[in-house]
Length: 629
Image 1 (cartoon, rainbow, N blue to C red):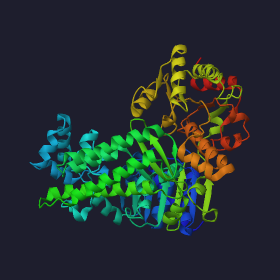
Image 2: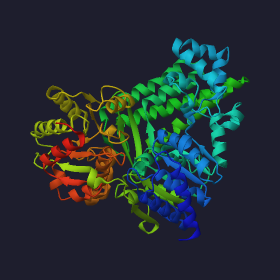
Image 3: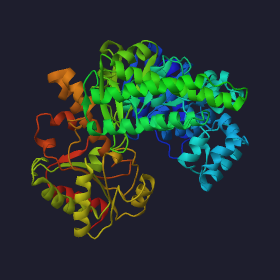
Image 4: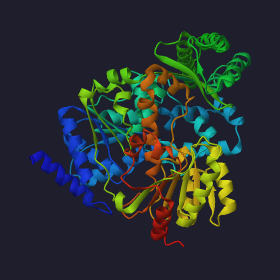
């Protein structure tokens, strides 16, 4: 053991000993060693670390020891806040290494001092406030008072949740802000202060969406860094597709008209910009969920061209405004900035880009035109992999992830350090192989009989996950008639309240869709049975994925569909065992898991649970661990 290795082991043991429920985890030490080697050798690492590994400390400790400048990109703002408010302060207290960290979010997460100044202006501010509801006015006053004492101006710092209208009135997006050097409040700007702190920090925590925007802007947002760590890396390809591409929605024109109205008293022009949103909604709605041709169909191309002309007219009108009032100058600059960036996106959509696919996503009320890259690999290779060392980690890593994001096999190591939990003793994987294929008309009725028997054996305590709302609703309606235990569904209340209601009552069952395949953490007997209705293959008509399938040809199933399905099923199964004391069953109603020629590709992605095809074994195991009769 080298001196450096010994120091890392000692430091990791020191910090884990300071945890409330400390334990030595072999996988955590193995992961920390791999991260240390990757940073030293400047070689990329893709590492799967199962639930309970303690992967956050496993990558932070060696990263901090290395003395490298590090950006940690998380998939969610919640995890970002946890790192910045809990994990990094904990390490600062116990690790014995001096380091600075900062958290950096998109501009719209911070209150804008210039907007507050304008709202307080007796002329323009009063005009805006006059159009607002009493509750919104009160919230704006409350936000203004808070901003005077806040250190960060970050909305996450609030102990209450402002309405969307109130927060939009005191914040600006990146497409609207002209920049600190052109703003009278630039010196005290919360967003700029967050960027200044990030420039000086050893560790900067961002969400992956912001990292994608940094890639799209040629590294104009984040400070230069030696190492990037993507936590929850299984969503990296999808997030990069969103941020590197273009999205044009009706709401963009509505928001733009509001920004222009604050400086330009021209109802015809302002109304014309707002009407662009309605026109776009009308032409996009018939194409919802569909791929579009390149160039775009005339029915879409024509209104986009009309929008381009209208925004050019708005830009000319804004440029003609001559004012010495500082607040008015800022309103003009923001309107010009947002108009200019909207024009850029329209130009990209109108011209069509080789290697990109256009499609319509969203909902009927709010469809949006998306233009996304077929392959994010080349962009990621040039902007990330060639410039710094990358660590990609998650509890579940799709087998094709490294290839899909442009990593060369020669430059990356892929490792699975497993999980510290005893899945073989504490859990069971049941495949209802006797059921018909999920596409059979008999499947739903027989699956409901199976579900009823399993829930009775578990005494409730069930998280049932479905690949569609229709399947969830039908199963919930049946179970409410057949069972004596409460059945909640994803439609009943917001996610946080729903999970709490489920966790607080052992007898309760929770029925949900793909939105709860991850992010549900309910340790203990309350969750003893996870039921998954079918293997969660991605939709065959997904416009972006269908274009990528066409590009890949015969290898598409193994490159796209199978890894995604295996990853999603593993995420769902991961809801069961959340602590070393947890026990339970994962039941998959889809017989393809036991029959299809690709079944082992999926089974190998799941935790190493005992496997059975016999429901009687499952019922006995459930009654044993839950004490139900």
